[in-house]
Image 1: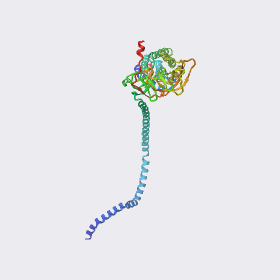
Image 2: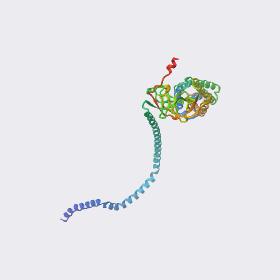
Image 3: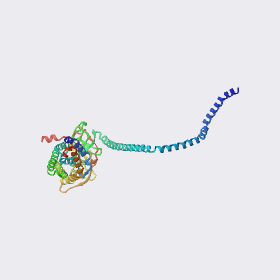
Image 4: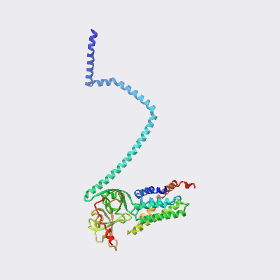
Length: 279
Length: 166
């Protein structure tokens, strides 16, 4: 009878104990009790773990050095790869900047059609100022087409192959461009030289040319479209017993650092060869 | 084999010439890598049929350069004749022959280029050309001469190894 009554009470006691634990857990007191009870155990485990780790470190140090050396080498390789990638990306950003600038220029002159090309080389002769670009007749480029950058006039197409073209820069000794001075309202010519300097020629002695005057293409002769910027007047000279005054021009285009150019494809230069052949 | 090698070697040199060489300039002059190589090649005692290298160089340069074709032909033919002549006279001293061919050839090539431009109607100042292009180019050619000569010499040893033992 007694045994039976205890058996009846057992589930009730267990249930009450579980309920009590749940109430303690809900009230937040259980954590504190567990923490207090587990604290010495955790301390003991920490102490033991540190000692075991120390022993393990002592036993495995040589192997770790090798692993670390390998990791170091791998990381160094990774760093060099990333540095190379950074360089490539910087170059791409630079090229993108140039292309954006060219695009902006093209947008300001919507009447013209352009093809962008990269400069891939220069003429092997130091006497000539030519550059080679990576687009040719396959892309619709023909001899005589004007070449510009976002800054101003570069030159014109001198020779074309299917996939490349040679551009005669305006600084070439064989280059001659008909120009006008924006402020002085006069026509003149700009010629190149073997030193790469630009000279303003055929300016009347009575013309009022000032330092800083802007020099633009005049469009006369039909070789270049009008109003493309070439540069600014730098110095003026009026030699005695000369029929014309001369001026040196500071070009707006940096010809030594030319990387990308635009070719104006819808401009047809006037071909005088028929007239000379008839002579 | 040696003749076939002229195409990749000269293509590589031409590529370097049009893309890199002009970065190292004094005034407006820069080194002519093709000319340097041809001078170094023609004075090597083991080299036979050196004219093929000159022919390939002429074809490549005429194709790429804006210079008149006859100036390029005249310049390289002069260097070939000079090199062949001097090699026969100074064969025991190829380095001396090399410098002689290089200096005379470099000056001759640039003068031919200059006068070809004048002949085509351009008004050029000889003193300006001399001071800003011809002499600086010669100096740069001399600076680059020794490494090019050593490479050319090594290549002849590699291409003609059996004649060494004769």
